[in-house]
Image (cartoon, rainbow, N blue to C red; front, side, top):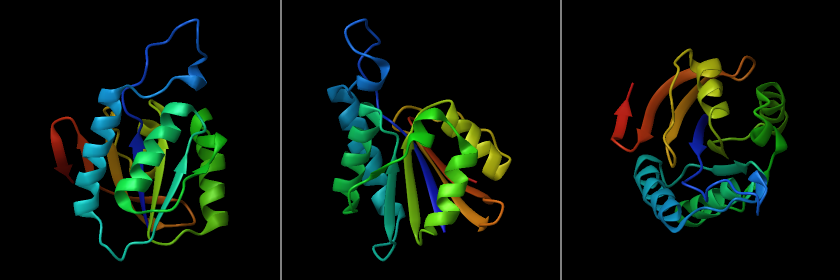
Length: 158
């Protein structure tokens, strides 16, 4: 199994008019997510079973919708643990669901950065519309190897 931690694209600025949960992707944010999703598509095998989980925050949901469209994957399921950064619950939900293939988690910084470190021992700082692919070696401990990070400077393999 592989897990891709995918940080949402650029979103509207914080304001008093909208709660943080309601902030939407900007047009540029949507374009960057689409671009990153196309790059991921070239890295994933057509036979990979892709499952997408998302934070319920609007900008992450919009990111997940773009990923679903570009990667020809099903609709994302919403997981509050991704919004709250609750890695313990996230790992329990993964073990319960036993997804096969590739699980993409669309979420937020700094949680995704910290989760990558928990799973691989490598600290990354994901850019907006950035992703880290982790090949899980132990489902019991949810530990694995960092394969690559996709960011504004391209793809860095490990």
